[in-house]
Length: 147
Image (cartoon, rainbow, N blue to C red):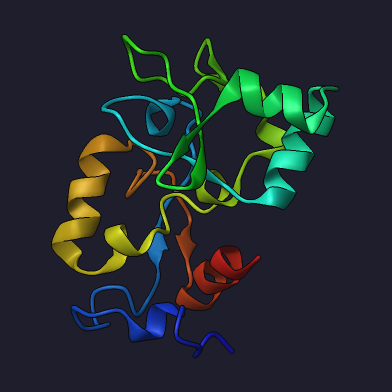
């Protein structure tokens, strides 16, 4: 299980620091949905799911809430704060159908390539290494990424 090319097993930086698992518990702070400019990529299935959730046609959803970047669809951001267009009062308005990119945070490869990368992510996300966070096994992290 979890030994494919996209697997954490194949990440660089050695496995020893993450072998026993990592601590994370979402605190609902909303910081992962704000900050500097960035992209939240959507595939066709996610686009349709969010449009349906918002009771919009796919076309209306795309016009109102997305932008095309190098041929790929990304959610819009607030032009001043860079908050995700769906972040309101530190809560996601499409939480139940949020994109995989959002669901899999903080298990992004960029955060897992080294202990230093994980610690950098922890400076931005209070749920990483939180004192009350459960230890999440390497296998469980891979399941969450693959789901």
